[in-house]
Amino acid sequence: MSHAMRASGAVAAFASGVLFGVGLLVAGMTHPSKVLGFLDVFGAWDGSLLLVMTGAIAVSAPLTQWIRRRQAPYFQRTFAVPTSLGPWRSQLDARLIGGAVLFGTGWGLSGYCPGPALVSLPSAFDSGALNSAAVFTAAMLVGMLLFSLYDRLSPRKFGLPAQRYCDVAALRGTLADTDDTRSSIAR
Amino acid sequence: MLGGAVIGLAAAVLLATLGRIAGVSGIIGGLLPPPRYDTKFEVTWRAAFVLGLLMSGWIAYVATPGSPIGSSPASTTSLAVGGLLVGFGTRLGNGCTSGHGVCGVSRGSARSLVATTAFIVAGMTTVAVASIVGGES
Image 1: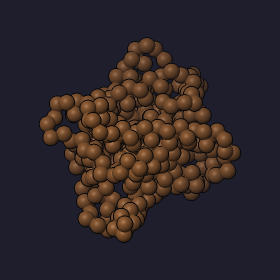
Image 2: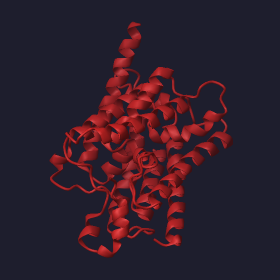
Image 3: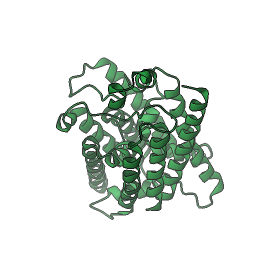
Image 4: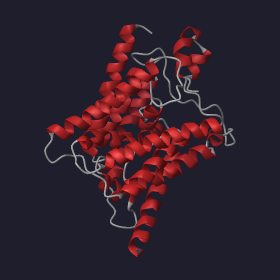
């Protein structure tokens, strides 16, 4: 990959991150009490976060369709999106569901998910008291590291091996793109 | 609704420019050891995205009065346990609200639809149980 491609790619990723953060802020995702209000479906339910998710999908879905018609993204030679290697029913393994349940539980306990926690983090450096975003983020990072350990130590008893992050078209067609393809395949 | 639209747009931007999924858990996870990619760029773009998130938060914090950033009403224990579960669970399930909920569903991924349903139900159950437990103590 050329330096220009790398540089513009990094700028694009940064811009996307900023925009994503702005979206989270405007949506109120950085107010954990609001998130917990959305999850409090048996209590005083605040359904506004439902609008957030549907709004995001309403914009993202058509754009995704349109973008995927291209051969490649603007600053890369191939797409690197998860590809199903089999019938979809076989893809619904214990890891996926177990992971989602664990994640949802943690989300319900704290009101944070990864994105809003990071956006909230800069405000942590000012407060005298232990900041909630900081505690959560530190614990989240530990949790992720623990998973890496678990992943290393456990044989893959559940379901299929992790999905390959590469574009099937890239495998079938352009072998010249092996560099990018190989780099996109997460071990 | 506008916030959601901006989130969706940001995800589309990442897909259009780098062809990647804007799943924050995977982006953060990819920055942690053990090293798992063959090229440095895989780390570079993730770091850039995370920096972008942090930057937006920082600017919001310093520039906006009546800050759009709130703290969580959860106890420190709940935050810590919650954080551990989110960290472990998002890596196990390979996604979070952005990865599965926005990007995956937008792609029509059955895995993501199932995962999103699962984590929303889990979240709602947790809040319900917590309020019952909290009410009794």
